[in-house]
Image 1 (cartoon, helix red, strand yellow):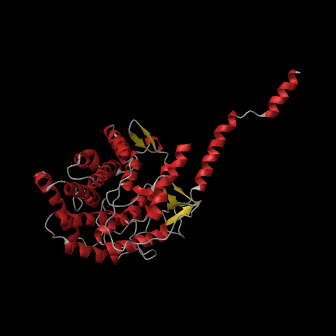
Image 2 (spheres, rainbow, N blue to C red):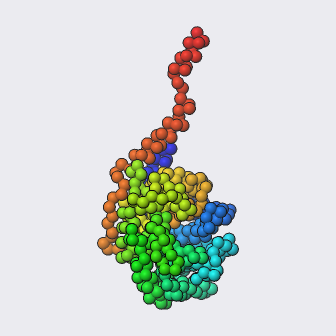
Image 3 (cartoon, rainbow, N blue to C red):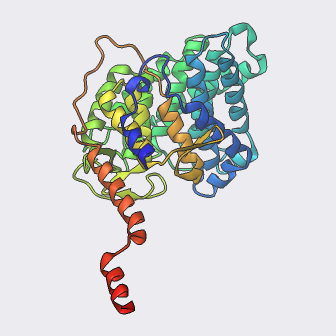
Length: 404
């Protein structure tokens, strides 16, 4: 119990900044590697359609971020590249692609091609050009071209991930991947990206000024409001698409979705003033707060250098997630939900998108006393554990009187 309390005061040196990752990340990745080898992807697939894909792609992306912090000749970079490629290769497996339709444009949909291209281009950027596999390079270039062509053909900025179903967040990832394609290959996608930005900005949720959770697949107009489970991903990727617009969106998201419950920061699934129920995207809601949105927002906050939000999210997650390290492997919630561990490690490795000058300044979120409710929870748990073993003097005196 003392260990969980001390986690609330871990040093802030690993929060946000170039070349910095939390020291326990490798232990988390070791746990995930074993879990994936034991079939965790298939298990997560039973919970939601993207379970297999997400668990593998996030594992690979976390390794990409780790590799980016290592020197080119550091064995850690070589390990990161190997692990990330293995994850990327598994994205093509029948188990991964089973929920998606090859009839979509691009084939298997923007979710599969967008996230897959983001991962593969990230790995390629770690490799020296003369050491890249030509077949992999051709495949990535083809995926970049398929994404670009699909966006160019579309009358809406939001491509489908399932037949007749579009989520703007998936297209944001796809456009971010095209930006990285421009960096790796011939910069030919600038016009497609500019067109997408203009079209997306014309289709914002009028209530929040943010991209909606779902969009009409024919027109791209919002079908509902912005929601925390998708916005937390969007605001992490938008800086790679358009840093100026991205900062505006992040500030709007921070004001309308970030909240505190008993002093501890969390992220609402619905904007302040709106209520709704949880679903497969958000998970169960506690006082309107989504655990998944809160976890992913840690990565967005790190990406923007928003230490005032990232610090309490990170430390609160260490406390509430009950992370334990056994045999060099760290897991949360006893490892019961590996996709949750994958989202968390991806968030903890998020690098700064750019060394902006001057760096953005953000308001305080958590009050100075935000740790106190967590200490109180611990004291209550200690009391509940201790009470059954407590000797009650009154009962003892009564038995002694009976013996007399």
